[in-house]
Image 1 (cartoon, rainbow, N blue to C red):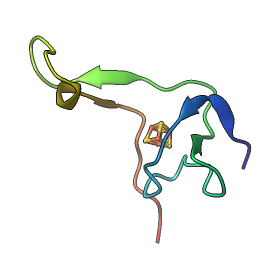
Image 2 (image 1 turned 90 degrees about the vertical axis):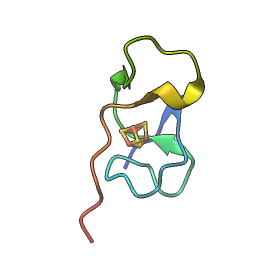
Image 3 (image 1 turned 90 degrees about the horizontal axis):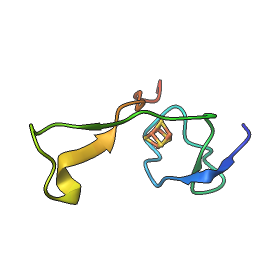
Image 4 (image 1 turned 60 degrees about the vertical axis):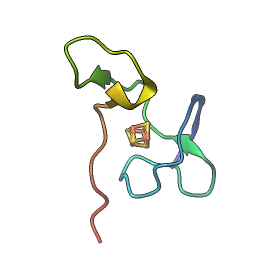
Length: 54
Ligand code: SF4
């Protein structure tokens, strides 16, 4: 799996994680907010997350 050095990520539970390195393997991700107006870092998330098949 190729790591995208422009997208650092430590969510190893995601199927798109590069695993051997702390990067995402996707060419791009969608960052989403789950509040009407984002005011803290907790209001934002990776919208491209998919749970690893285990
Ligand atoms: S899709 Fe999002 S959560 Fe999954 S590895 Fe990439 S940046 Fe991390």
